[in-house]
Image (tube, rainbow, N blue to C red; front, side, top):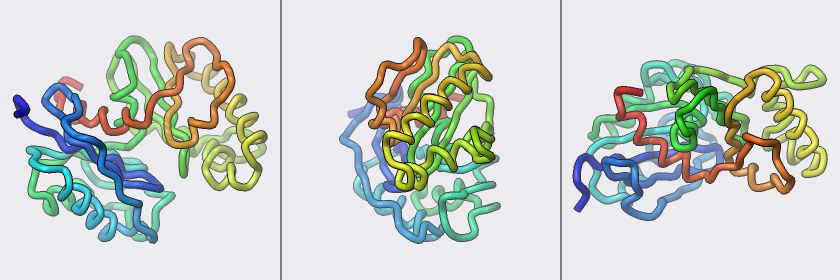
Length: 234
């Protein structure tokens, strides 16, 4: 039996919604549960899928949710890769009502960052999947609402337009990898991070030697970082 509260950590992605129960120290208590993200990904059906995932997780005391968009006080401000009326949607209250447990919501790349960072100096997490997410940390503390994916990268296009799934499908792996190498160099020149953590489903395509301080991190960190939402010191 787990000592302390059990956190059900949920990662809402463009392809799948994943969940895992964590003990009070953030250690997994069971295998990851996964269901496809519904399409169209409207608020009501996404919340319904979260409820389905949670029903398979066993007993839990509280919930953490990582969501691919800008989050403020539990409300979604942007969800550019999802359908429907997400702007202003109170996801935190909706999930809390559906699961009947205290709930906290954070941007998914920020939540993955909490799972990946070491807590020293400037650290940056970039997730490569349906879109491009980012999380910036200074000495273990989150700098909220960094939307690197929507900043310009090259040829008048953003990181997401150049490196998102649609771009990968359009230009192929070779050109996509070349673009990612350029993006890594640009990020290093702008932020000078002690660590740059690359995650997300398409990070699996990285098959070259990365610069010092740049690492590929497991996608499970997007779930394991959920324990940090309940660490009020952070």
